[in-house]
Image (tube, rainbow, N blue to C red; front, side):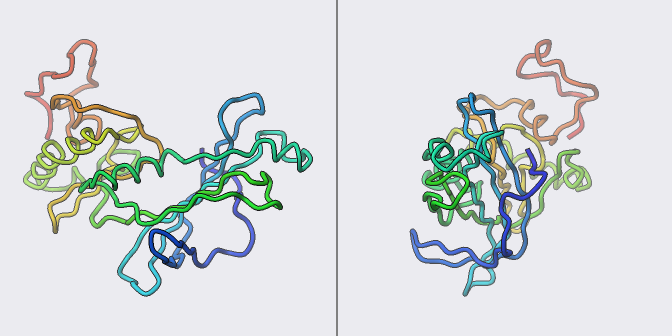
Length: 252
């Protein structure tokens, strides 16, 4: 969930340095958001916070990217426990978001942001979780315009019918096909996960903080509906219509 207070206090972060795969420094432009995920002590899941920054690369101001930092937190109610007790919660963990971007990049996806740098390390002895995980990574900001937000695809539906048709064709024949082939889709599908670059004619899928593993399936207009690229006249009852509903009176 969105963090109600910051777990990343202290002097404002101005730059972030990575050593691999090549040394690089990223200048912080702004803090975008924070999230926290905390569980009770008897829960098997881990507790953590994350912060996301918009950055530019030092020495190459045209390269804009996002930097994400994840750090382990104490479970709920254990913040005041002694050092030894808190240290017992420490564990190694790779955020699913990093798993997604690394896999998509390793498999040379052309429709998702590229992972540029990453680092996995341990927190120091003064941290709330001594030796707990501390993971940082950078992925590129793709060019183009986001097709919508959590309220719907307003940007998409304000476009001309020809533009919408072109976007839908790229979505059908390239974007959704490639991401399904690699095996990833955002957990909550929607237009906020699509970025259209009219200059290149590419439609990017973004936002993999939460995702599900998928396999390629035959094309269905249901996939357009999930991302608000098609509008049925009424709410679709998928159990009644199956995977391929009658779309003769849909808006495209």
